[in-house]
Length: 357
Figure 1 (tube, one colour):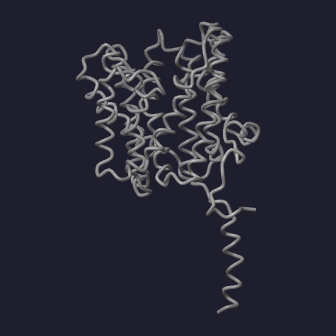
Figure 2: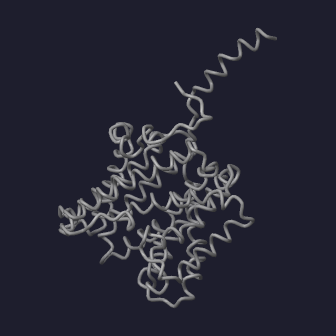
Figure 3: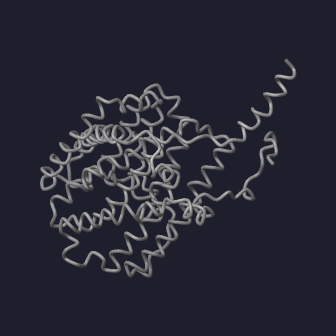
């Protein structure tokens, strides 16, 4: 028996050193979601004068960030405010936020010809809001794991935020609070819930759901504001009655969840050529905004054909190709120092933590 234990020990040590295998399904989800984010941003200048592009834009915005946030909540279930996880929170969210908030401010000074624009870490610029939102949500994880009914409570918080214009722009708290239910829902999900939406019966209805959603969006474009799905403003700021805020919060939450479930049902669960890119979606998210903003400044949307059906398709393909490149391992290796820095020198080693080789 002693000899058997000696024989098993090296194998156990080797298994401990072996990196944890990533789930191909979630990497596929993250890659396809970031492609939709990039396409949605690229379509934004094409909405004026095109009801079809506006409808596509509305459908994409109804579920692409909710899908990202639900998955982010799912992978935050083990956050326990331990020293190692807090350090990862700082290096993976706070440092990139400071770096890219500063970079986007200077880039916007150039593209928008606003030399007096100040760097403000309290007012997230463009897409950096997601970093500070994820930081706040993840810090609140232990609280939500102890609440008896976390999703309904988070929905109440979002509903109250939707009728409170005085929240202001600091840290984009309006959006942090209104998107909160999706993160809390992700915290409550288990692997069996994802297996449930990936059943054959659900996959069969997922396609028709998107077709119906596109038809409804086409009908709704001239009749309602799509800003309800952006979760950036209160009802009063959108020119609606205060009671509309809580109502539309629930409506948007329901619509988004149906589309998120349909999206997850259509995502392949096996390894594909783009599975490896799922590990680099943060890079694609943070970097593609420079090209989207630069495209307007450089006049890429100037030609009239770009605003037609062929142009919208071409813009979508270019955006998908660009964000794909930005998620590749070479880009990750080149920019890891600012997107995922180690910064071991900045943190004290816990006295009870063993020294690692």
